[in-house]
Image 1 (cartoon, rainbow, N blue to C red):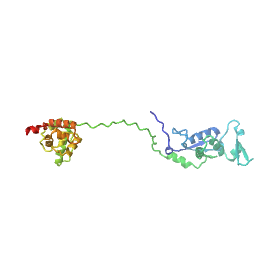
Image 2 (image 1 turned 90 degrees about the vertical axis):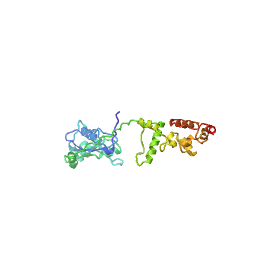
Image 3 (image 1 turned 90 degrees about the horizontal axis):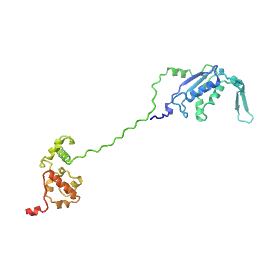
Image 4 (image 1 turned 45 degrees about the horizontal axis):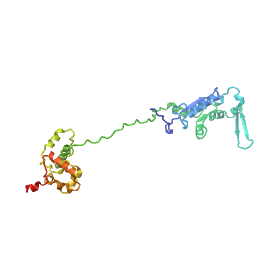
Length: 286
């Protein structure tokens, strides 16, 4: 997709041009000067910006007209008072001030309004071949321009990246992580985290590990939901041994611990090779 680059006032670079009007027709000189002042010779032309260059016209007294224009052209001026219209012929104007002839022709080819008034100041007309702008032309010839600034381009759209959810850990992986954290807390090492996603040997060893090891009596090793663990801890249960000696009715009486949590607890104990007291087993033993 192509995009139009709009020019800005800060990117404008102005140059100076010299036009020799000796022996040339008035219209050709005026149209060339107006085109340079407007900046139509530049690829960055903007009709609403002052993007043109400065123009120096020399030998204005030697400009010529074709056909009978020298006899027909009239130049008028008015003081603003009634009856004060003044008229001059081509010959009279060329004798008094020949610069006005070219200025008047070029001004008619420039836009009207504030932009046109600003563009008028870029035209310098002189009757002879001498002009006071040699320094501008010399600096233009000697100046070594750096690489022009490249126009801004639209940045390509970045591909949308959908964030991936972290992998869900199995119960055995949660137990392995809990045991690893307990072991690291008791040691002086600063490595507190381990990944068991691809370490199947570590997971299998955790499954067959004896729950009687240090830290294995905690309720965290059962892999219960956080809500169930909070309810059991609030009721005073802090170890697996207490859970094993407690009946179903007592556990269901705990606030926030329901039948689904009880079923999850029994499955976790079976995975560790433990079993809880069934209802009425204490009375039978008594």
